[in-house]
Amino acid sequence: MDEMELRDTAKGIAIRAGILGVSGLVVGAWVFGLAAKTATAIVKVTVGLLLLAIGGGLATYEVKKVQRRFREDRAF
Image (cartoon, rainbow, N blue to C red; front, side, top):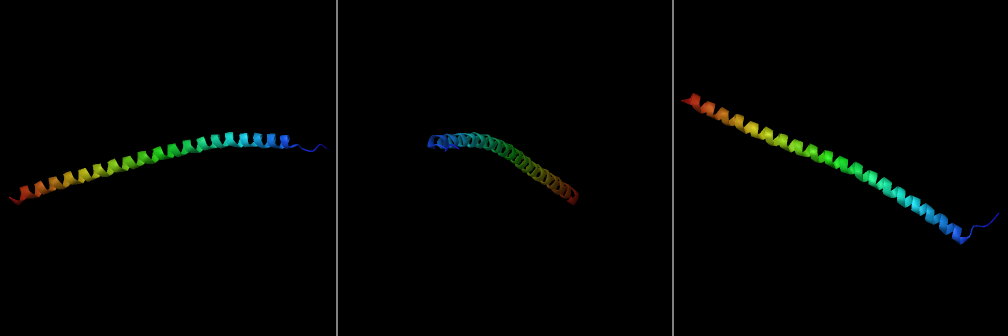
């Protein structure tokens, strides 16, 4: 059995490091893509809830305003 030389060992390490580096980039890009999609969804939901709250508040304000006018008109 031949003993491994230092060159063979270094070559094996370099190949494994390259494979791990490339696969790390691929997995990292995939995770980043998922995170970006999730963040986009969270932002959309947050904006939607904010607009819903603003719309609900505005509707409540308008209803209260009409109720006040109605009470004032009935008072006379």
